[in-house]
Image 1 (cartoon, rainbow, N blue to C red):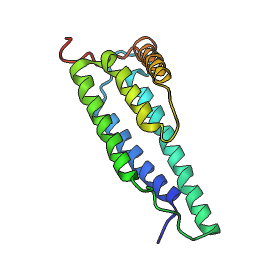
Image 2: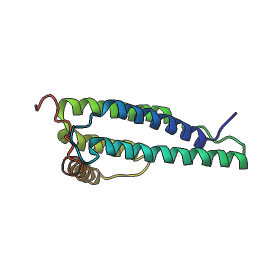
Image 3: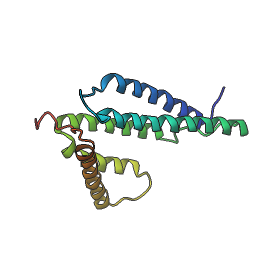
Length: 159
């Protein structure tokens, strides 16, 4: 059976959210005598939202298919696969650099690079991208270190 793009995306989201929920359950350690939910809560909330969104997207795709069974355009326009591959490699490189240098020195540059990668045909001034990168880095640092009391990577060079 041929499916609409929404249905395929919904199925992929459902499968990945279940896999990641299982991995979180297996790999996240809960400190003893911890009264609040601790470090396990945020990933559960995030992947529950992804699961529900994917389920709704799948149901929308099935509903749209019943109304009009003609297939959608391909997922990626010309050059889209290359762009997704480049973005994925940037994400992997960011993870490697954070392991080596830590969150604080790498995050602003990574966010800046992602802004320019994801801007598409829009024009983004470098000063605005730099300002957004610094603000988002400060916000993420505050959210995780102060709010959630989770240590961010410090990198092997700064230990």
